[in-house]
Amino acid sequence: MSNNNLIFIILVIFLINLGTAAMLRMYTLKKHNRGLSVEKSLYRFHKLKYGHYIFTVISSAIISFIAIKVGEISIYFLATIPFVYVVVVLITTQAFYHKVYQAIRKTETSLMEDILFFMKMLIVMMIPSILIIVLRTYYITNMESNEFVLYTLLVLVIVLLLITYPYLMHFSLRAKQIESEEKKKAIVAFINKQNIRNVKVYQFSSKRSKFANAMIIGVFTKRIFISDYLLENLSTEETCSILAHELGHLKKKHLLIKAILLFFAIPLFTGIGYILDEMEALFGFKIPIPVGVIGMLGSLIAYLGFIFLKLSKIQEYQADKYALDIGVDKDVYLAALIKVTELNDSVKSVNNLDELLGTHPSLENRINRIEEAKEL
Image 1 (spheres, helix red, strand yellow):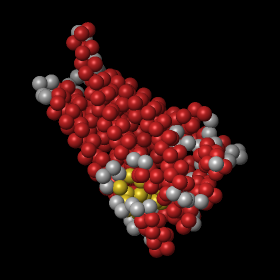
Image 2 (cartoon, rainbow, N blue to C red):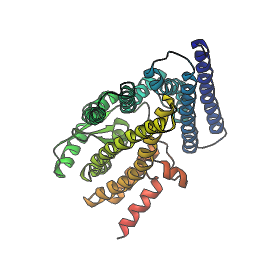
Image 3 (cartoon, rainbow, N blue to C red):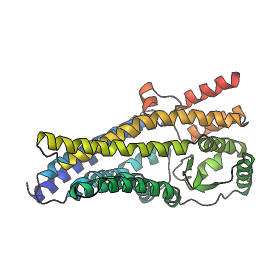
Image 4 (cartoon, rainbow, N blue to C red):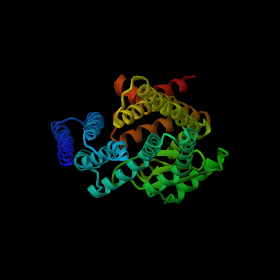
């Protein structure tokens, strides 16, 4: 197969992906215009969008298989083409999805703002996978190299990412000092009251995108990022109750546990590579590089996905309990959780499958847990 044919096939698959995004946009807007509520429209749209993401990953795998047929292609090209294709498709489809949020949620961000923000967040999230794949590919092409060196490099890469991640997020979010002096003083006082000295709190702009959220990030350098949309719409007491939840993640060592989970992924990841190498030697055939890459990446995603999703929900319940245990008023905390859900136009309950696949428990289940604690 010639390079021109490969380019043509990639273009056709790319256009199919864009066509799918266009159809999802039309379907979602049509349902909303016929009276489906904002929350349910977005809930259905997000489910379809995640399905499209899966289709995009499958498309990248197809392209990888086809690329094998083209001679004299760099091994690094074969290893990285799935990532490049997925990134290009996801960024391009934002142009279609941007209109959905504008029409349904009345967001005010420009298309370019949305794309640039999505690009920064996507790059930050995919850096670990890309670096690991590149290191593994280097080892494949230099079999005489010391495998211990490869594993050491993998560990060093993850440690480096853990160190730099808070700074990368700070840059991506364009975070800054909290503008409201009242809330800034209240937040600092609240943190000091919990005898915590190594956490800095910043705000990031999200009013125009109508995104209300707070997150704590970092194993070594710890930072809490709160959106200005949340700060503007929640009272000082409600804001501190949300902050208590984030501090719960810190006090319960949740960030460290997730980092350890990431380290345990290295033996799995490299073990899959070792098994593939042994299969080649045992059966006398060559496993195409994209197959190996997809196999290893798929195993990594399955491991981190299923374990991380279950662990994440457990940690959310624990952080909720911590907020109540340190004396946060339950009614205030419930009001804050409900407000955040409504500000994001999210549904309050989901089906069992979506609950299983989500990183957070549904608001309904969190409220039930809190109400149960309230009765004790």
